[in-house]
Length: 337
Ligand SMILES: *Cc1c(COP(=O)(O)O)cnc(C)c1O
Image 1 (cartoon, rainbow, N blue to C red):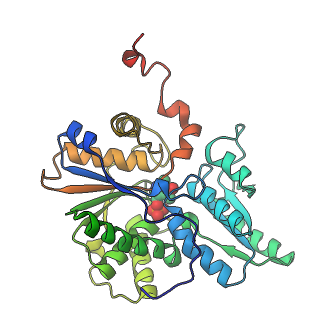
Image 2: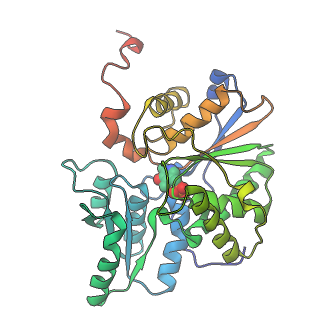
Image 3: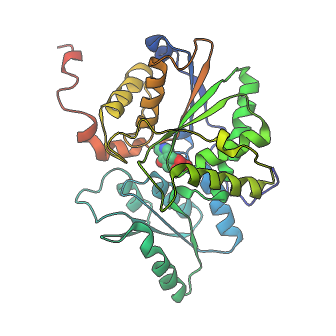
């Protein structure tokens, strides 16, 4: 890959380790995990990879203010606030809905990281961003707008690079990886994976677990990801025949919709915590890992396969979903008194 502007924000490579207790418990294939939750930027997560290129671009363009938006408990916004703080940039976050009573999870961290928080109220989150840009420019600032989830072709470069990183680890550890399973929500992770595996070569299948129901604007999620793949490929300079074959998406685990915690997520969070001591989150990785476990139980993988779950982070949101994730007497039977 040619060189793009990049600002180091995290610690890479992230660990790639095996989950032997989980494999044994499920009687399934060999299971590995890639720990992007340990990327190192303000409690970590997959957005760190994208932000290295997005913030690199903002700095190269001489911008002094970062604007982005997301849901109330956005991990992307929290990592963006941290990246801005560490680079001496101002940060404005436009978050969905109105200010909640309790400062918890990622919003607590957004405050600590010094972000200016704007609540979108009855407006759609994105609607306020152009006004905010004009207002800040009027005050002589040079704002840089990062899209939801950091998912444009520049952010996706982070996951093109992640494929190179993974392929090196595969070589070092002599792994015969057959599948990667991951959460797909704003599409940048998946687009980067697809372009990276074209650029660097990959023997494994990439399986994105859809997190949200329905469309992004007027487009289906699939067409959104495919167009992001084309733009990222064009930026990197690789050709993309068969994009739609390379974009594998599963929409059977969206449950009652975005951020609605169901049995799938509750069980998955506890399973991984109690077999391997690793925490996944209620919105993204709990759902994607739950999907991965379901696929293992259904026998979608053979015992010769090696399945990698890519942990994209999010555990700081657990605290704001405490009531949805666990009921107080859940562990009673396990207590030894
Ligand atoms: C943003 C996010 C994802 C989804 O990544 P996209 O690139 O937006 O598809 C997955 N997991 C967590 C924890 C996230 O914050």
